[in-house]
Amino acid sequence: MAFDPIQEDCLRLILELLRREHIYPLDNAAVIERGMTQYQRDPDALVKTDRDRSFHLVAKAAELADYRVPFLTDEDQINKEDDRAEAILREAVELDPKNWDARRMLTAICANSNDEYVSYLLDNRAAVEHDIEELVESADNPYDEEYAQDLGKRPYLRWLAALSSRALIAGQYKLSLDAARDLLEIAPDDPADVRYTAMLALAKLECDIADLKAFKAEHPRAFAASPIQPRRPDRSEPRQDAWSLLAQINVLYRAFDFEGASHVLRLLLRTYPHTSQALFYQAEFPDGLYARVNVMPGSQDELILAISEATPLLQEGLGAPENAGFAVWLANHELVQSALDEDVAQLSAMVNAARKRGNN
Image 1 (tube, rainbow, N blue to C red):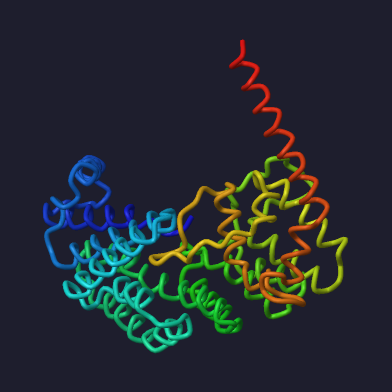
Image 2 (cartoon, rainbow, N blue to C red; image 1 turned 135 degrees about the vertical axis):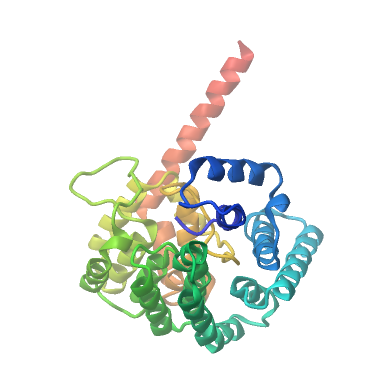
């Protein structure tokens, strides 16, 4: 599950509440519950310092940019909300110049190109890492230690995750994979979900199926205990995420192993709901500004997100990007077309049943 800005804002503010009230041990359930209730009612009441306020503004900007703007259709409204998010982030940087989330997000909004943004992430990576190390070294009380061990490190994890995902878009596949590996070395359980980007980068680096399996074996904690439950379970096949399956399909397709690619495509169709529609339309979803957007594991939303992030793979092949070979092969595959026909038939039956009920 990707980072949740609201949940993280709440955790930060509750930790500061525990500090102000000199509560120790930190797992005081009554105080934590009181803090959560207060956050739900009025989070601003918990904000006491510039650092608190700065990250609180980051959470607000993330809500706007990642969870509101992508679903708007009116251009004027989109521009208005984008301007609001930018203004909020500028204030966050002014309040706390070491708020690297705010600085990164503001640069993502203002950069003239993805390449410019990637350069910024590379140029400032060492400074972010230095601040995190300094945070850990200077922690001299239980509250600072708790913050430094988890919440304080997360901006650097998001920095590396952004570098990995944006380098993939920029065509810098080795850089994308290296950034993912660096993140997984720091956080083996992968709270940033960077393993998904790594699988796509490996596919673009023209690896083979053995390389994909080896990467998973190298990072067992990241890939362990997948929450995804296939809609039609097949005990002979392990549960896999959409990014891994799309990477495998692409690798097999490039190797002209169309039978193997079709087999993995069949697994993908069994794992996610309405897979055929997502594979046929291949809609693009904007990158999360704060982090990868939170979606329900195993949902159609997750599949749509994975397909969108796999755009560099889909654009492979002869022809213009909108008519790339791999994208067309997927959309026109008989398994996808057959599933689409089934979906249309089911929808038609539901409409007819509803009409009959209305006439009775």
